[in-house]
Length: 137
Ligand code: THU
Image (cartoon, rainbow, N blue to C red):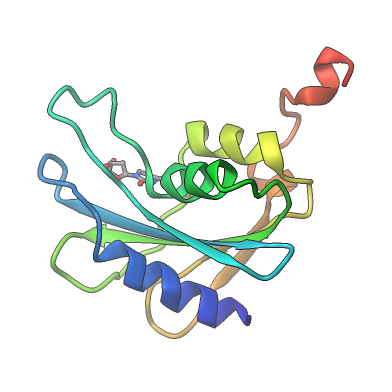
């Protein structure tokens, strides 16, 4: 699975977004260490707070299925009904959810949907974080 293949699966996942309030559709594709991909999209709520981001949809689906080891995630977002134009970085809540299951070198790919991608990792996106090690695990 190349980064661009993962980005393309995130672009495909974005089609499943339920985002009537923001009109901003996000897609994610999460690659496990075993090579399986879990897709996710944002699912909004009229009460706003219960909205689930694309990244968390993908993570929670994977974790529910028993997955615990992850390699990378691709994320794309932009105005619903239009192609992606700008990079969409994961929100702070999603970064903390990623921290729960992933090492510092977990890869994060962002794309403008133009055939290129920006590569980062968890330690760069969430430095000096609160993690399991703080509880002595
Ligand atoms: N959103 C995501 O799905 N992922 C992010 O990391 C950023 C924000 C969603 C939440 C909401 O449905 C919409 O984008 C606008 O904030």
